[in-house]
Length: 384
Image (cartoon, rainbow, N blue to C red; front, side, top):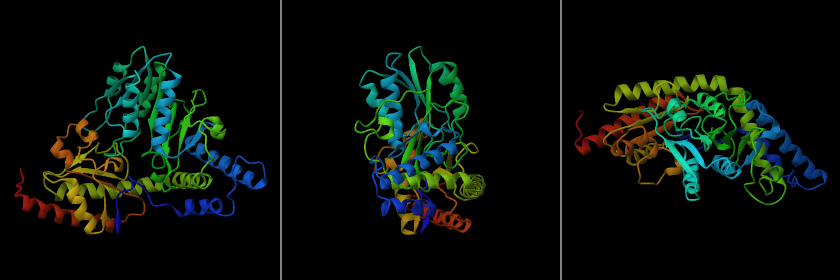
């Protein structure tokens, strides 16, 4: 099997697996209890919080554990809405955000909030000037992702953070695809809220965190006991959190070498695809993009049909966000970038990890070329 869908999920690292094992077996105590077995579990939570904080240049008390990126996004946006309602009811997000952000905003619109959905350019990037022009006196939150999960484009996050700070507006970034793959530091204070998910960087599924700058007031998301300082009730997933921290530490230590390696692989793959498959379209920014993301549209084919053929050949890829798989609607990200519905339905996303090899990439391109050629012949397609 050649696995090229790492934006959907990654293989659990050996480091994360080993870190989890004690808390799945012998060290099974509930961190909220008072005896020594529970104390060791509580200590593991504290150390995991410290490890993750160090990877961001944050303080341990600014890290809140969640079940993943979607929960962190929901918590950030709903908390801002609840906490800042007296100041205003207007929010700004981009049209290419993950559904966890967009659908949360749509739900809030039904409660009387107003949301501006910003257009993006042909690469999927927000224009900071257009964003600043959308700011109103009652704007309480700006939420723009760090890197797009479908096409890999890096957003101008730090320019947006400066705009938000200048206007006294809280800024949230969904860093689910970027954290663990690109260096991120929150030490300058520009980011108020940041979401991350463990299974995107070789941690366990069902884990994640929300960074909350110390001067930002966070409102409860799950009412219950005193866990996460009384803001997210429920017994903590100690094993998962230990695995999350181990994966974060591993990612931070390997980041520079892995980024260089992935850029070489993805550039090689992109070069071959654009040269050897007529009519193929590269999605996203050609340079300002995640190191392992290769997103393309191949007219006049449908991505789902090509994926089935790739699967038969033992190659795992996707047509876009895993959260939208099964939907018959074309990608909202590609449509926002100006792709036609027909082009968008022909999208394929290959997302690489440091475990992939050049030989796997070359085999994937060779197989894809044969599939595309065969399917186009059957359709009577002629190169324009």
